[in-house]
Length: 259
Image (cartoon, rainbow, N blue to C red):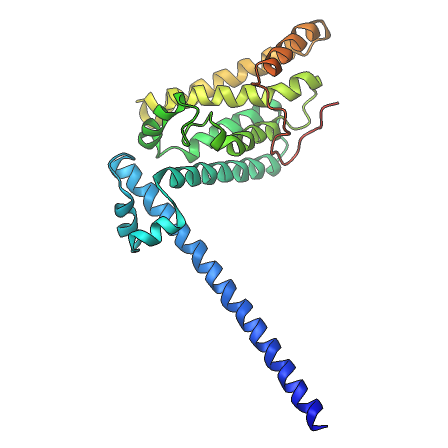
């Protein structure tokens, strides 16, 4: 009996130690996430205020109340912080668009407007930062280039948001497979205009979005006609041949598979 009692006590002690360690690990993970988020938030604030080039990792660490080594533990450099910023922007874009699309029944043009405008709502305070980062776009090997391999997942997730906006719109499958890429490329062009737009609250950019979306919807009503199928097929073939068309399925919440 004494042996069994001792064994029970030991088993309970081991279980208590196990769950205590698990609890401590969860607390540590939570603090780690908070610290990482704090570094990211302070860094983006400094990038906005001082500019990307003028801000150092030491500035970021000081603002977050950390030692420089601690900041480097979470982010190996400013480029890693910017990539985390890209990911955060994309996460917000997907979340806001999904919520807006689920709120009420919308037509195709309204859904596309939401997908475009929501992105620029998120970026409203970051024109200066984006201007500094955009110069890396021309170098596809740079980790901050939105066209480079380092940001492929974020890029495809962005295309997925446009695929979500397309939804169940009646479109030929060749158009459906190609249009998220086309819309993503278009929104990158509008982003460049947005950076240079000096109008109040970038009103001209908003007008450009509305007008462009209206034209896209009208063009698709023509391009979807059966007589246009050979032309559509040729375009998709060209995109595949030059490796512009992404073979992988977009990271959308809802997409049809190609038939």
